[in-house]
Image (tube, rainbow, N blue to C red; front, side, top):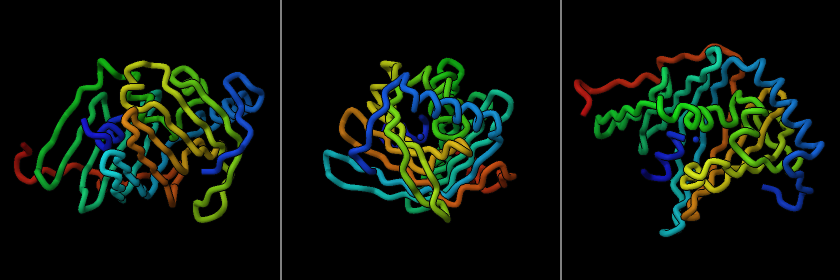
Length: 225
């Protein structure tokens, strides 16, 4: 599975004082994420994604949009990447659908056996609770920074190391820049064991507003292969 596809299935400033797991700072961050998660209903954002491949030392840039909707305890997610790297991804009702419009190819993956793992990735940075974050990751709270989403937004920089060995085979480290008030990420960085790196920036975030799902519909041309 390619690094970019793994991100779709799964999706700075240094020198700050680091706060380890169990620190007062992290405890407060987790409390705020729990509170934000209880209020989270949906988020939609424009996406800018840079994929760095270490072997060839090249970076590919993708743009598109993404949404997350909370339905009870479950999260529904959709991702649309624009040409020339067009892709549509849907996570809904325990299934992941990956559509390549150029090849008119649709891949469907049943998530039942790995439901918890899929939820870990698909709620990562968007509506997930702080307690769920601690269950799946070792969290290092590296303090506050400022990013922009139309206006300056205070974010908390969280460095995550997966506890599940199978997840470490895909990502050795994930860094989130979280808006703790809304429970949404303005930026994510995923690092693979190979040294490949993927950086996603989220802009124009629409929080707890209706999402036009037609934008994210998978439309096969005739019959998908």
